Image (cartoon, rainbow, N blue to C red; front, side, top):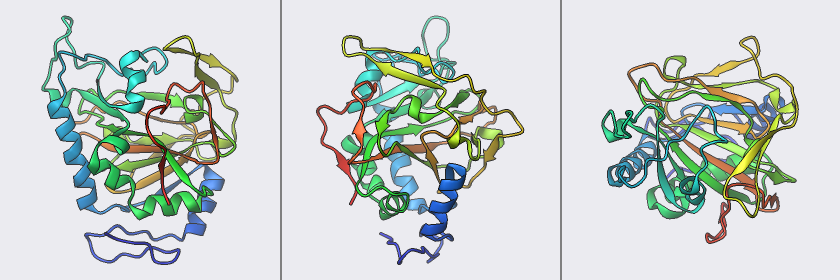
Length: 300
């Protein structure tokens, strides 16, 4: 296990994560741009631990029982009971183009999964251990969270050829937390580039209005995506491709517009995402994601 040294992480060997920026600079970049990047921050052995765990989950997934597709273009229209229940479970979701007209897989199962979500940090020991690596608590503290609370985890495969486009959006539309808001923590399990569907962000876009909101009512299992502001999504002149090597961390504000393109390449772009609030923040009861039967997942 590796540990932070004061407020500056340093390279030890090729087997250890490293950080070449101070926590103060990290916080300044985040405040100015709405995101910050720490390249090659996670040890390959730690990446492998959750990559193997994800493969095991996929191997045990019974497609015949659950053919729920996660639509990356219409995130508000595919939140069925299986999706809502995943807030406190570990569920697999298929790519839109992984099923043929009769509803059968048109490719091997391990090439058909869009993502796994959303309580792996609670229920899968390898993910629990990974999420408690010191670097995550350190970075959340640097960004102002006194007691970071982890609400959801997602393992995203971005499959070769069919890994779907994720439209421009802001996480605050889907994860509503008053006071401190939500910080996304995106970890590249594999190299991410334009060719295999890396993240795109709008630097400074976290200062723009929240454009839409997805809320679930108490008497309905699904919600509605409502427009709030007609500010256009960023065009090519404002968008920045976040191309990073495996092991890198991208931290971003819940107000930051971000997206990713379809993966047209022959290699996957696997990533692991966590969403944190501060424990002092108020989690809206209109969020689709509720953890009524799970204890808070807190980082020291």
